[in-house]
Amino acid sequence: MQPTSKRIKPRLTRAQIFNMSFGFFGIQFGFALQTGNASRILQTFGADVEHLSLFWLVAPLSGMLIQPIVGYFSDKTWTRLGRRRPYFLGGALVAAAALALMPNASILALFLPPLLIGTGMLMIMDVAFNVSMEPFRALVADNLPKEQHGYGYAVQTFLIGAGAIIGSFLPYILSEYCGVSKVAEPGHVPDNVIWSFHAGAIVLVLSLLWTVITTKEYTSEELKSFDEQIQEEEIHSHSFSSIFKDFKNMPLAMKQLGLVQFFSWFALFSMWVFTTPAIAQHIYHLSPTDTSSASYSDAGNLTGVLFGVYNLVATIFALILPKLYQSIGKKKTHMFALGISGIGLISILFIQNPNLLYIPMVAVGIAWASILATPYSILSGVVPAKKMGLYMGLFNFFITLPQLVNGVLGTVLVKYVFQHQAVYCLTMAGVFMIFAAISTLTVKGD
Image (tube, rainbow, N blue to C red; front, side, top):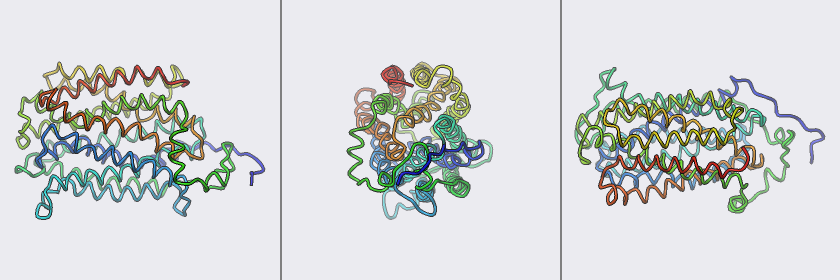
């Protein structure tokens, strides 16, 4: 039945929006530990630099498979715990277990090779992160009126940055200020990394519990009563096979944003995978096989600090995004952010002083803030409310596909084109960021 009158979805307070997205703090705390340390862990367990991108393929592959499915089912999950919250909590528990086990894979060497265990934990971690993350995107559209969507995604970006700052800096802080060892025997992960991963597991679970406990979700009856009315049959009757139909019929703006996403996430994947070996080779002049020296540990810790810097910049820049949207528009904001990041990544090739690496990371932070907020803010205004979770999950296809392509090509490029010099992967990342900025011009509307 149609509701007899329409209601306007009430505006939420800043505290309510903060609580609603606080779980992202813990997710990104763990995700930052993964992106900053997974390559060094895998190299410690015996992975060659040219094969790193192949090990990282588990991340986008799991995202491509999991997020549309999670989005579809979260659209149709109506429980006493809520619509999206069951996925937050389940994903957090699994991700926390994987975080705790990945750096400790060497202690399970009696059963399986540590490299295989570490790769498996990376895969499980990514699946769990994907289960948790996409329903968070949909929750903003579920709970907030359209005029608060931009602010809601900006708050999420702020919390993502805050969690990532601590997660990125933690291994460095533990080794330099808390006396935790940064070196270990060959084949073993240093204690500062292990302790950081354990802390990440705890923070992840606690932050997700905070959101689950403090956030109310609307029931299906309440959602149907708002001005973007959702019919009973629309909420419950679509078959699972409709995912493919919806992907084919996605809004034009979503397809245009997909091209931007392809270039920008191709670049991000290169940065996450190859920054540690690039710094070890290009700045510390280590050989590709030197993975157990103190200098290599310093390179890994510096990567964490640099990633913390770009997340700090993203956290601050996220607060500016809503004003930029109002003054120059979302599309121009995104184009500026991506362009300056591309220039910054290319500049790393010409840097030898490690202290100068912070400059390009400022540029990357500006782009990261916009990447996490602007496309979703644009998308939330063009997709039907009844399928918000599904389309947010399908939109992830444009994040995972470029990473899969990069992962396959990365092995060939590093070995045969770049001659094992990982720094050229960062140069390539900068070029793709500039491609992303140019392709923003194809997006219609704002």
